Image 1 (tube, one colour):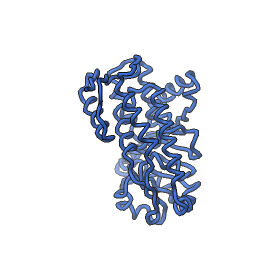
Image 2 (cartoon, helix red, strand yellow; image 1 turned 120 degrees about the horizontal axis):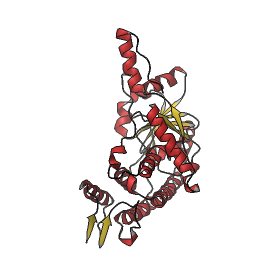
Image 3 (cartoon, rainbow, N blue to C red; image 1 turned 30 degrees about the vertical axis):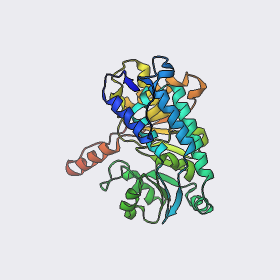
Image 4 (cartoon, rainbow, N blue to C red; image 1 turned 45 degrees about the vertical axis):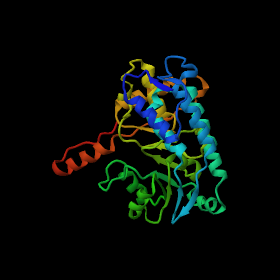
Length: 313
């Protein structure tokens, strides 16, 4: 009984074993841990083996959801924790059909969760409808990154629903949240359950079919695709497109590009997938947005010496 890794990087087998540990399962028989992208892995594919277990658990599990102060709190499921770990470590090695299989299981999980909600929670969730959702992660006290966006929304009196990944984030940010609403739990539930009008998303990913959402998602990540270095094991252009599509484009409606080079690469990725099958029909719109962190630094520099320009595309 063993999983044999075909990856040069020995970390992959450790990451895979951690994913198995989260689900509390062991491997019976021999499986090969290798990329699905360039070959038919067959019945001995370790990634397929895990995906089957993960999807089964996603469909079976239903988290508890309750009202907490001026917020909704959703408990952490083992299946969602396992999904996040597996997605982070192995997404770039998965075929499209494997990804679609996970998306469908997530969709069933979300529907089962919604169907289980109490009347109290359903009634309270109506307060979230048609407001602006914002991920709490990444907001600093110095107005760097999306803090400037938050301040601008407050100036214009927009009602905000905060997406808080855990209860400690919520408690530590009560001063910032004020009288606004909050959603405490994994971001995968946020748009589906709250039905906010727009979600300004950061450091999370709703792994699902975008067609089941009424919420429009704007990806506010301010650092260019950090997973690009992970594909240095392949040099083919379509591997780069594959990575960008699933980490930046497939799970948002609008994606911010912060430099001209980033904009061109994301646009090329969109063009590549627009020529593919209907399975890739969701293509986000790429928006030229500048670099908020760099702009903030330049503005501070300008205040000291003058003459700095903003770094908009």
